Amino acid sequence: MAGADGHFGQVALVHDWVVDLGGAERVLGALREMFPAARLHTLFHAPASLRRLGFDPERVSTSFLQRIPGVTRRYRRLLPLYPAAIERFDLAGYDLIVSSSHAVAKGVRRGPGQVHVCYCHTPRCYAGEMRDEYLRLQGLDRGPARAATVALLERMRRWDARTAARVDHFVANSQAVAGRIRRSYGRDAAVVHPPVDVTRFQPAARPTDHFLVVSRLVPYKRADLAVLACSQLALPLKVVGDGPAGRDVRALAGPSVEFLGWQDDEAIAELMAGARALLFPANEDFGIVPVEAQAAGTPVIALGEGGALDTVVPADGRNWDEATGVFFDEQTVAAVTGALTWFLEHEDRFSSAVTRRNAERFSKERFVAGLAAEIRTAAARSA
Image (cartoon, rainbow, N blue to C red; front, top):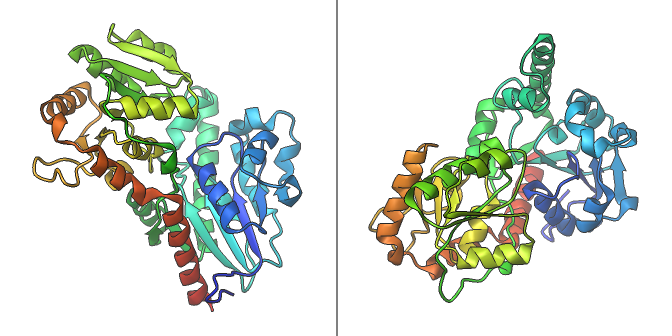
């Protein structure tokens, strides 16, 4: 299927859905550039988002969910229909299937002789770590509907585990996700970090006085910890982003905290370059924002879990030739204030050049080369 020239025959791309453009969609955009002749199969999409990724609508196939009025607003309530929708795609005639999966895309059916490589953003453990969040967001976390929904999610968990066998080769976006794939599916996964456009960012000649949070204001992102810590220490903090938890987070802020709401890419790049440090209290599967901050030469103060373990080099007091940030070990205000205090004592030891160099490990070119190598490995195993 694949020769030394890197061609992989007829290629099908599969992605869960294209609505908001987040990290998973950046990967999809890079896949389009890798395979410009490939056809995209996705459950549903917002046409404007599809155009921003550069896809020709004539080369996109959707499921029956696309015909549901308002699907791009209501799609979280349609979760029970996803397995049937993804399994109805007919991928006969393709040599290679590349799925970009954070929900059900990996469950697409394949035929004899086809190779399926799944770039997994995270396994969805529907009856595990995803269940309580889903129930809460849909207002089903109490009352008689809870039991029925839990039973449905358990069926989806079994489907999710069973369809892992349809994947020939898993590629994870971080070591944390590779571990989750191992626990969820009993499968090993190579790690290829997702692409980050580090060229958009440049270190500033001299940072200003502010610390920075760039995040959707939703509960699991834990922006409240950064707000409370900076309020207690009277440190200037700028918060970029908004969301359903915005009102609650604003209520916690002292006079040193400023909420900027949504900002465009150019403004965020400028704010990152001018920040003393980025605060990142979330436990993310990968987390693009810390890489972007480092591309701007800005250190990161982060929870030492999840994707941050791959992207940030924590200072230990001796490794200043490679250190790019500070870790705290639990999601508490005390832990964040402790990390901030340590950072303030050692701030002048961090180098914007070292921090920028670390971010360059996550360029699009490295993603493309790494994923192409994994696809060649999968093809060779299946030959």
